[in-house]
Length: 332
Image (cartoon, rainbow, N blue to C red; front, side, top):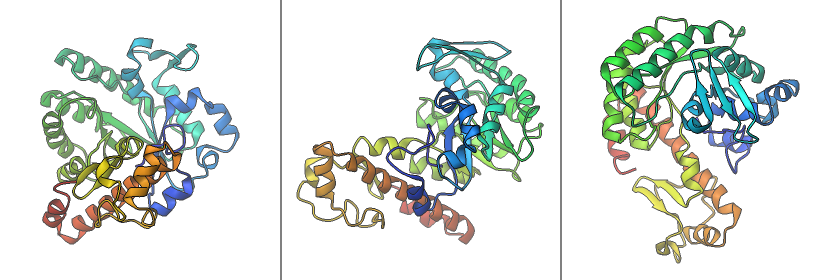
């Protein structure tokens, strides 16, 4: 899922995402509820109409902001009190209110409000966040609208026993899908991979399994091998705005001097219809002159790369060619 926090994937329109072949995008409940507001979006026909996107939308619950806005929030078993990052006004978010806001948006998949522990975090801290996530889980389900899918979230930090306990509790509820939360929050890869390896098989095979906030191409390939189905990450779009392009030979800096006289593509094996007419030298020139087109072309390239990755992942799973796919993306 490309990340469109404010109802837009930065530098792109919905028609771009359609042409790239994406079927699902992610937006953020907290940020959209702050501006322009859930009431306005509902009044204008819902988030699909608001952003002119006819395919499915998944919204994050605001749970990540429970962690990221730690200096301006207070959390209790009842809910979270925020100070708005826009004007400092106080906002009280409960599990029920989060799901109701997502219902106002009219999105297809709503994420349950959870508490995402930061990294590093003590085991006691991870256990407390998990306890509160479990307490909130049925409250999220209690207010879902007809046709509103709600996914539950497994927490537990990097601790196998907590993850096992959390998976057992959350999957016992009638969620429409299940997510592994609390990864990609700053922990090194060698700590992230074991969490995915021992948690993914604990989630029901007959419902979607979603790894939140991941990730690099090789992280995705590893997680798919563990049984994960769905991903979102800001990396392809955020890195694009900072000159970084994904290729089969690794991530490159499109503003580097080495591309100044390069009249062809950065990677002949990663050429996409949306950007093939533009040379590496031209894209470097755009970045060096701070032209907005640079970020747009880099974003189109990176999302095309990720769209191809996910298509080839599906083909490899279905066709039994997984080892060849792993080899193809070994340096990506």
